[in-house]
Length: 246
Ligand code: NAD
Image (cartoon, protein in one colour):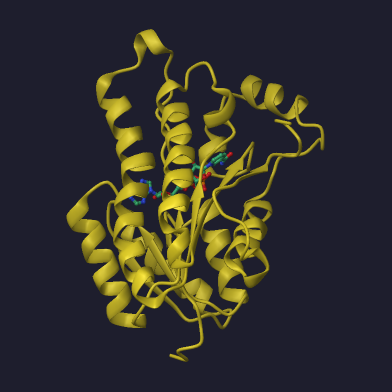
């Protein structure tokens, strides 16, 4: 591998927004590690991406488990020697109104969406500090800013991501590591395909730009934040929502 190339690890990179970010960073010239709990799909997605000319590698693991996270980063560093860019994208939703929300679904969503980002940030930032360069991009959600009935667990995890982003941005700035978040609105992926038609229609009607977002819309922002053009931006939350939240 050319040592001048940046190395990016994307959690939940096997499909949806994560895969689009992997593709965008790959076309920017980065070596890309697709990490996902779906190991077969991670392998297939890495294979598909490598056909576009990107240098890619798949690792599987659950971001909420410290041993899996250590293993993912060990394998990634074993292959490419460093990590320059981390995208904390892995996420799940388990929606229910508060009074019916079960503790196990609270725990799962918090563990994957928030604890997972913390665990990956901790391991990645150690590696980045040694190289005195790093970019961490956290995928939050506009739901973390405005809340949503039926998504107390998801909203809390995504609001937590914003606190994690700002605190780690302050801690890591002196090490030349920037940490920013993207807050997507309604993006067409597996996650939103599960929404009931009425909820989908209501969402779409409230988007000023009058269309759902695509994974590519989010990936373009990740590409910018990972680039030298964004070197003076840290601790920010960039909305990608067609104007839904202003
Ligand atoms: P998706 O379900 O298509 O992708 C999520 C990926 O995360 C999947 O590949 C999944 O296997 C992986 N994953 C789930 N649990 C994991 C775990 N424990 N460890 C490792 N990987 C795991 O959904 P998406 O829409 O592409 O979502 C990507 C991110 O964007 C999520 O954090 C989501 O909350 C966020 N987001 C999505 C939308 C939207 O409208 N789709 C809006 C705002 C935020």
